[in-house]
Image: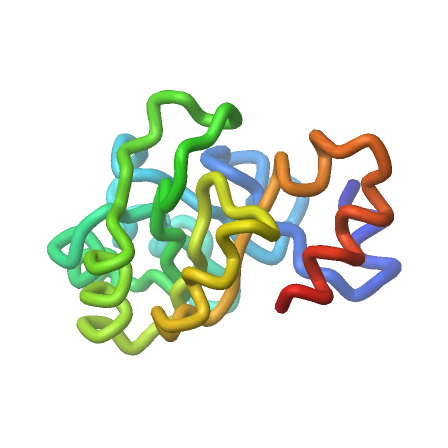
Length: 150
C-alpha cells in the first residue's frame, strides 16, 4: 500500500497502529480516544509525521490540539454500519469543535451524497467516507458523484 501511495504522492496515514506507521515510515498515524494519549504518540512519531485524533467533543478536541494533533476526525456525524459503536456527534457540536480549535477538522461517519449538503454550513475542512463509495455497485461512479456534490 505504501508503495502505491508514494507513487501518487498521497500521504499514507495508518489507523491506530503507531508501531506499523513508524516501521514503514508512513506519513502519519490516526488514533482514537482509547489509544495512547496524543502527546505520547507525538513523542513516538516525531514532529514531521502527521497525527490525527478522533474526537466527539470540544473538550477532547482542545486536549488533542494541545497534545500535538495536526488534524481532528469528528464523528460519527450520521448513522453508519462501518463502525456501529461510534458515538454520535451532532452538527452543532461539530460547529462548536470547529470554532474551538485552529487545526483542520475532518467529518466522518455515515457521510454520503444525500447528507453532504448539511455539512457545508459547518466550516469543516474535509470529509472521510467509506460506505458512500465502497458500498455502491460502481465505486468509480460513486466517487465521481460524491466529488460533484462537493
